[in-house]
Image (cartoon, rainbow, N blue to C red; front, side):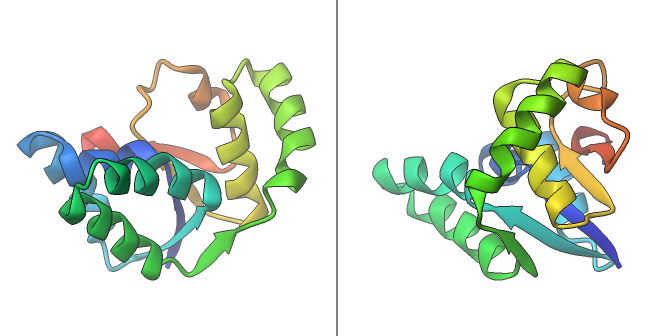
Length: 135
């Protein structure tokens, strides 16, 4: 099994993207060879806005995904210092650095993202960064 951390953009594509973006995201999310890992960060980037705007189907999609996550990174405070160092070294945005450190904490094999391969996130060697829009 591939232990996969799913960035929020992938979930957004699957739930709200055009046909092609949703197809690419679901290609990965429906893969039986993967088991998924997430964090409160991803939850915060997806669920509250959908619920606030009463997008019930979208919120239900996210909640269903989180119900099937095998490991959830919950100690966000412990991620901050390592994320600060990673962001400094690799030139990452704050959220990307936090997500990568969360993924490392969960000992994932890969980090699935919608970030383009030309972005700083792809400077990270571990875990392996996978572009979801090529699915």
